[in-house]
Length: 538
Ligand code: NAD
Image (cartoon, rainbow, N blue to C red; front, side, top):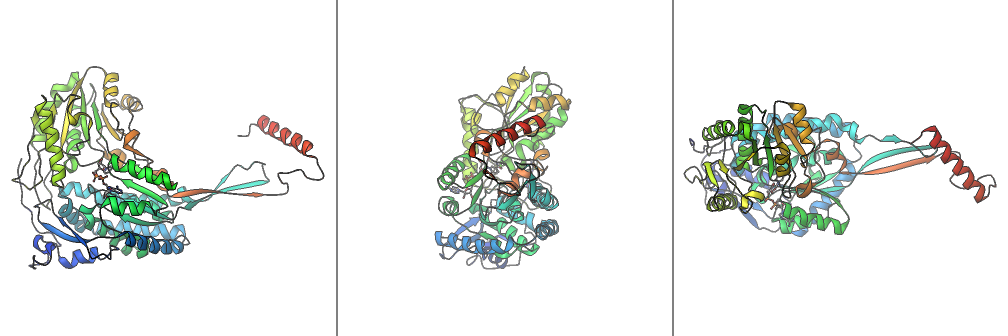
């Protein structure tokens, strides 16, 4: 595995005094960083330092919001939402299409910033602006399909006219994680805005700059500035302030935090959607194309160094192809290049933090101590950067090992052999999670039939996760402890609306008329109900 060294990207702005501004010591223009952090609603004067996983050096001082600041962000958002919801749907959709163009136009800058903040390989950062462009285009082009007022059946045909409106909830709170810092901060907010809501968002503390660049691009595309408020600070404090005020909460992060947020939303009787963790299984069936499966397994396991909610941590391989598959998978993994760089050309970057490195190291050491075998990898790589860890393939993982059922959220995959497909599906369904799965087989129909029995919200056939995740027309989310609700598709936008029924009654009323007694009225109504049944009406 080869290594490269970090270089300055387009944001570098000559020498500055690192004593006074940490960003200057690592190549981010301090003026650029300040322009982004100025968007945070924060009056406390407190800041939190962030550093780049590429080298561990300081990156920014991020102003911290108080509970009062979160209140101010909600007030501004509520005022902006009143005006925004009166704009036509076509006007809102046109701004989304401008965002699509802007994100593609500025993608180099976006990708550089993602790499600085997250330490991921450029090819993995590339997926983020791409996902935002896909999401913006999809919702802009399908806005009327989801949001137009629809006619429904009235109780008395011809005399009861019923329409259902999709009314915005108001101000949506979005709490997002660090692993895909640009797309996770933005993608759930785009349908919320299109549906006529405002947003108050709290991105993860480690990756505020990427999220703030997203906020800047929203304004440049034409969304009113106050419609999208950004606050910063620890989740337990600022996240809670959001959950206490929002009309709906969209959360992406760990199952533990998701459970807390669901409880708080339940107390306020506001809705929430939760996109949580996973322990995702991949199945390589006996009729799989082994080379294709091995290539897919590398992406499935090591994209963004495994810090991806939909990446695989359990690989079940049929007896008939096990040896050939393992040889190809190990060989492809050993050919991967690792490096701390903004350049294209590396296959995997850094983990984001010491905490991530500690978890990955602990899971592998625990597995090895209890008898698992390391087929490749299994070591930190401090020579490349402070939080690098090699892509690691384990065999012989058993239930008493932490990495058997707990999410590692790192570049570690456990291989399991199976004889019987029903048994493989049962093992894949084992545990608490149910986010994403992949099935490799040359018989698509058979794989799709097996998919129906896998208890995951998305199942990819002959692909790792991209086929479902990038198909924005389809819902994405988790079953069981992996989440509640769905992002993307109709589900991903209707969650931000209330269904409002408006029924207009003509000529008759639902009470005795023309001097009729209550008893006669009851007979007439019964006769009408029976007639409707005979006519086949729903
Ligand atoms: P986390 O739950 O610790 O943090 C996620 C976000 O929640 C952060 O912004 C954090 O500041 C905030 N937060 C933390 N405590 C909070 C609280 N008490 N109240 C309100 N907000 C709070 O998660 P993490 O460990 O940083 O992120 C990784 C996890 O996210 C993994 O489990 C991963 O599987 C999951 N994830 C899921 C998806 C998905 O779409 N299903 C996508 C990305 C990440």
